[in-house]
Amino acid sequence: MATSGNVTISEGDYLRIIIHGTTAFELLRTGLEFDLFEQLETAGGMTLAEVAAAIGVKEQPARVLLLGLTSLLLLEKEGDKYVNSRLARRKLLRSGERFLGPLIDIQARVINASLVDFAESMRRDTNVGLRHISGPGTTLYQRLTAHPELQKVFYDNMGDASNRAFAQLLDFYDFTHIRHAIDIGGGDGTNSIELARRYPRLEVTVFDQESVTRLAADRIKDPDLRKRVHFQAGDLLADPLPEGADAILYFHIFEIWSQERNTELLRKAYDALPEGGVCLVYNFTSNDAGTGSMSAGLVSPYFLTLASGEGMAYSPDDMERAVRDAGFARVERYQDLGFSHALVVGHK
Image (cartoon, rainbow, N blue to C red; front, side, top):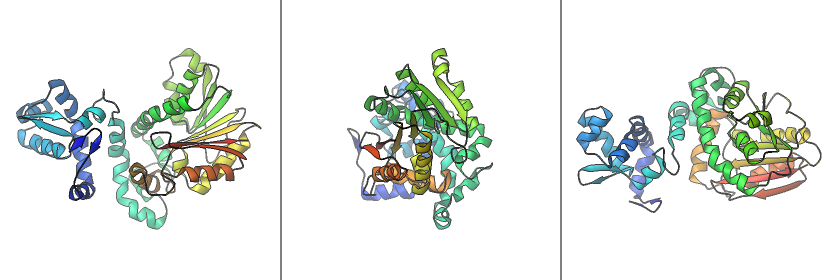
């Protein structure tokens, strides 16, 4: 039963969703592939025969899909018509409160195949699942440079996920004292562009792989933003960081690496900053007790099995400890910011 943002199921059904998780995911992904949720919303509901005709399949396979999606509480039945549930309207329509299409796309096309190697990745303490994506390098980010289409899928999701989380950071933290920020691993430039748009005197430099910075540069149409948002290609692990900035943004990177490597990279940021400079570490987190959230628990195997072979969703305690160990003497910590995010600010 779905009520006011909560879904209630029995213990047995909860275990069934875990055991048959691949099937549940494919039911959802297939519904999106056939644009079923959008078509049901436009039509105000459809019968079995109308659904089959609308998505171009016979009634028997349409019935299988509808049974699955209804059992998962994504569809409901009103008389002889199938309609979207409240949850589907909020999360599975492009006009909804939070459309999850990009996340489902990256799971289907980049992540899911690798997760069969989770146990072996644990045994070897490395990202065995990377074998499913050909190309150079030892991380997913390096391998994606050989697959431009998958790279776009990846950064479309990262940009989409960043939008809401970064918007809340902009409402929370005042950047007016910063002159020039380096956005390490800035991806498609979503954060840098929005930051420069919000603060008209601020310059931002996106520091990331060359193929990624090209994606970012192509997104900027505003002439003023083009003057203030810069791009420098480089390898975070091997190359020196750009200098001359008074802030370094370490956003959504902490979860990729081990605690030890994060400390090394933050020490590198410390060395690149002038006296009085700041390093902002902003990331999705688990709780300090190591018991949740469910999102943190479910995303962490991806970092071990595919992304880097060493990361996870860390706690705010982990973030603060790494910033202090990197040399920042004065540290501010803000947690429970929404979307399971925390901000740790190190002052040099």
